[in-house]
Length: 579
Ligand code: ATP
Ligand code: MG
Image (cartoon, rainbow, N blue to C red; front, side, top):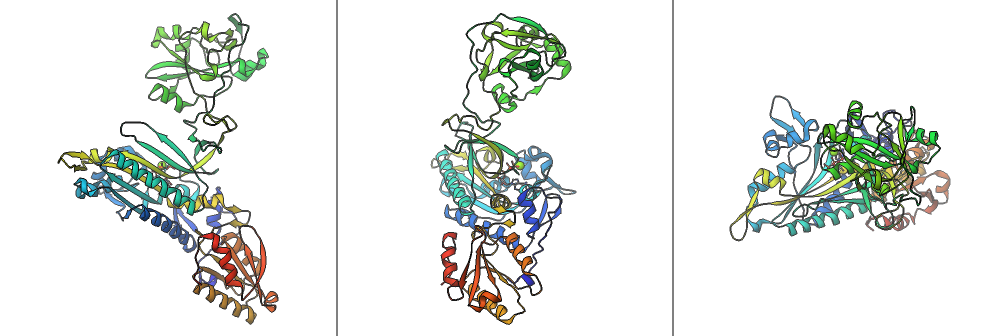
């Protein structure tokens, strides 16, 4: 491809709408442009990357027996009503006005529709159906460029089995295929697993990459691979324990003291001597949560423990439930007091507080605290569970190494659906005895643009993108400096033809009027793995310069040795150029 005839609108400046690195670089390299919020056009060089990613996905999906479909994005709404997902998706689902259509945000319903009509006998199974297709979701806050779009490409696959063991097998095949896909794309990823343990063994795994642009927060152990969303992540708990000398319970006047910090200053005590109280409402009843020091409650863990939604109590409810305002609430006397009004209030304490004594906490009387609280003596029936939000540096609960907590982006998701869709849509098969059963399904998604953006998040420097050969729009960026000189132009044309004939994809910067500096900057910004620089001085001794984008290493190669040298350089890069 000749630069002079290509549409590669590179930008010098960082566009103001972009914050995330991949978004900035995709715009600056002229690979994408925004049409409106969350809606992007792929320009020719950007689309080359999308095609390469799609091809890798195709090869690996075909390798596990996947069959490629292409389903319509425009769907009759009534199919979505069969599964109740018009309501479940709510505002995320795009509706077509005046007609009963929706734009598909995913394709479980449509695949199940086809399965229902054709997979009737146990002999028809197993099946793996997939497609690489545009999805539409009215994401409330599209941001980070193509990482969260309102229209995006997804590889979605669906498995159809007649037994739970069959589903396990299909799921395992996808797990392996996903690892190959992300490895081949050159991504450093990790896997967050979740198993609900429900009948039939539903489970799911998310493939994630570490990135500041991510909206998920995960805890990760590099040593053993433990990874979990912070909503559920656990670390090793070290309870504060009991002090030898057990103090007496005493009431202390603490005027206008509201926070743990203020309490520590006022009484000259440490955070680890305090138990912070928070009141939540669960099924209309108050629940007092106790955390050590200034630690915050992980509401997801609390909801999981209690089963169902919780909400923090309103200020007026605090007075009603405890008799005190926020800042003076505590465990001593709470159950008795709250039982008068709203039913006996439970006290749930974090494991770090297990059976602790000599604690300070609110006295359920505004402007008063208790000191010398012994949780085993002064507050009966406390339930203990892990309620903390895991932090970086804590010990992994599996292997004792240090956990890291960081933001991450979900690249892909594999999920054992079971019979949810086949039951609601009546997709059944007949077994050997002629008995009817719902088909057992799995669904498996990958965000194609997210692979591209995440690769850039992981592979860039101050000058631009650093592609590997597998995803690079072109393998080689050939630059002719001073092309007005005939010998330079001639050498470039020869190299261009020669390499193209050998199946290299070459972007040839043949712009006659562009300065060398502009060409170098564009080459680094666009980030092809190899640059070949042809200038008149080196050409006098029959040499050109080769630069490896990733390392910045440069060396001279004679024209005769060029293709052999390139072959050596690309051998590590999954390319098999023709001889
Ligand atoms: P997220 O939690 O990030 O919204 P999701 O759980 O909604 O993702 P799935 O429904 O499992 O995602 O879709 C499968 C894959 O599609 C995701 O793993 C992700 O890579 C991609 N994807 C989902 N939503 C978007 C989006 N708005 N823009 C780009 N890619 C997306
Ligand atoms: Mg989503």
